[in-house]
Image 1 (cartoon, rainbow, N blue to C red):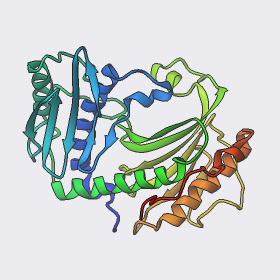
Image 2 (image 1 turned 90 degrees about the horizontal axis):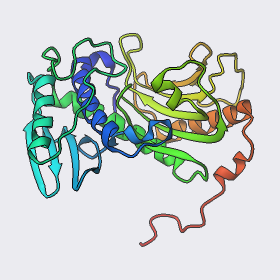
Image 3 (image 1 turned 180 degrees about the vertical axis):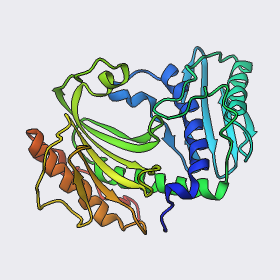
Image 4 (image 1 turned 60 degrees about the vertical axis):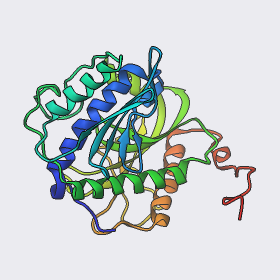
Length: 300
């Protein structure tokens, strides 16, 4: 698979990012709260991304962006309504259709319409500027998210530890998973998002699609507390992986082609060893104790 760079699809990507913000803010209001904001993560699906199953009073609901079908889909109980996902349709139009459709089925909710962690001034319910959608680009971006999710699950699923399973964080539009310790670590500044996200030590394993400064997507590994110091460890793999002291992050950039699974897994495992040692976490060998299950497939 060739690499889709940020500059190849930045306008389509921005539209999808803003749509994810609408869905994510619905989860923010309706999903039961979890540490590290895990409850606001969206599900990456075969066709795009969704809120997953939510509850409002006696109603069950889900909102989905399906790129393969070029649709935005609202499910409430046993009813389903669709709106076309198309080039030229504004975020404002999507916004009002979603909430009017929910309300027509007895689900009346409100969200704060300011985009989160995006340099966009327009409110979601007023945004007539962002309207670009090209399905071919969107499908390539979805394939990147699905690839990243698969690699993260392969790494973390069997870990015997407290964790946040992989999902789509709509603020930064990245797919991430976390290994969380039970060590309290208060965030030093009183900011509402950060103080809830950063109140225990953890290691985040993420995948990001790039931006105007970094045009290529990348896997990253971020420890909290942030280290912001030199880390010279020859065990880091693969060879092209590196550590950025200023950002306190490890990176594996995807410059040309999607790498095979093996070097991605080496990146995850070597950074885990480096950071658990650096953070002084104890008992981490247990995390990798093999599961007492028959290897899949269990039926041949």
